[in-house]
Length: 250
Image 1 (tube, helix red, strand yellow):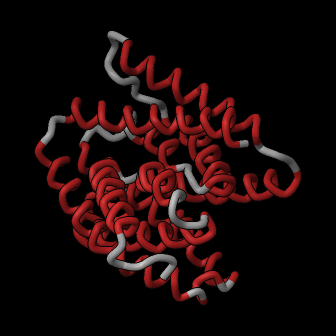
Image 2: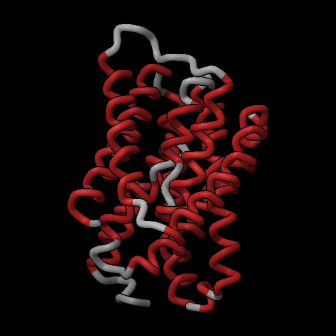
């Protein structure tokens, strides 16, 4: 392991992942958003991304076994093909140019979208089916570029699915499919030959299990309005993180 399993650093990472998967258990996305900044203080990024991919996939599969029948497969069947096309576009962009300006534009759009939702006196807008095309394509593009497209699907699905439990499991199903693709790529590349990654995923799995269990039960107890506010806060943080990445990291 990169550090002692009983070290203070390990305890910090474990607690961070517990919080990250509590968010994932509630919203169906957001684990990387919460976990990556803290884990990056102790682990190289080329270990964090494949480790989180394994844990995310496991979390999604566990929730699908429990609640998979509640997913909105009518929405999923439209999103997944477009997600794949978007991922191919994202891969092409990554090979041909620096995608910095896309981060800036998406960050600004996300922030304005959520702020409008918060301060508008109207109810959350119900997007038409036609919006599945731009949201799914853009989600695929950003999944390929930065491994973070979940919040884009959440923006679309939260306006389409009224039931919070149905939204949560639909979102998790999409994240599971996206993560499965990433795990297969890492397998083909031989990333998981590094046993430290497997051991880290196993060591952090209890944090994931506790987090998704607590998150699921919180979601079942809160109102839809409160749930949507939580979703929008997570999406807003995602937008701010994109701007931070553009201005201070790239």
